[in-house]
Length: 319
DNA sequence: GCAATGTAGGGAAAAGCCCGGG
DNA sequence: CCCCGGGCTTTTCCCTACATTG
Image (cartoon, rainbow, N blue to C red):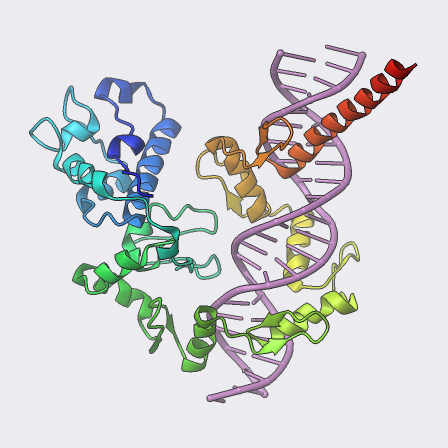
């Protein structure tokens, strides 16, 4: 089934007067949301976002012509060319999920996009939305059709070269470049599903032998990594590092909307749901939704209390 | 005051992936 | 070229504490 997506479904428009009433954080939120929406349009196949408008959004420039809303301001006519283009997406259908391929984050937090050439720098916590359009070949769940249609777009090439510079082996499936071809071959296994190393205890398979060894520790219970401050032990060094942040107070993950910082990525993700209003955990008994799994569980306990009370009242009825 | 809820801190376990050195 | 160790990130689940709300 295909439903049409209209620009009106995702757009928020302000007049200059309304814009003047917004504080800095609200303006930033607006820009972030619009960039996010544009990136979503790109995901579903919209291919002609106006780069100057995106640039303006990214730079936080003023977007208005006196007395008009933002989207009217971008053309002399009633509608901006930008909006016209976006309106053209009305016939874009929501993609069949089978046409969506998994994302490989182009810039991992350990390899942040430090695009000095462009003056871009992305911390682990920064949203990629402002950067997505420069990496359309490597955006979350980007459609195959879209990738194909852009595979020969010359405007992408200069920036792509920045990321492949000095890396001779490139994955023909996702375009990711590697400094040596054995790294590429291993990477390609993530596409093919090949996992040559299998655990003889549980049958779980892994791409790398070191991953299997790491996995084996879950069977042996071995925890070779110990915190020198409190003696707590962990099976993986990264889990120790995470733990050590509770001693150091390090909080490298920052919410782009309110600036609050967190010691771990998942805490930031959880926090971000307080801004988006997302409540993915739903009570199967009353339908009430919660932003946190544990809040749902706690809530479900109140139903158990009700059940117990119902049992009591049932017995008292029998007397 | 109390129960329910919102939110955040933190622990634990595990997996995915990449890099560099031997 | 392959193996290996190390490192980073992410996800999921869980428990808990404190604040807020009705």
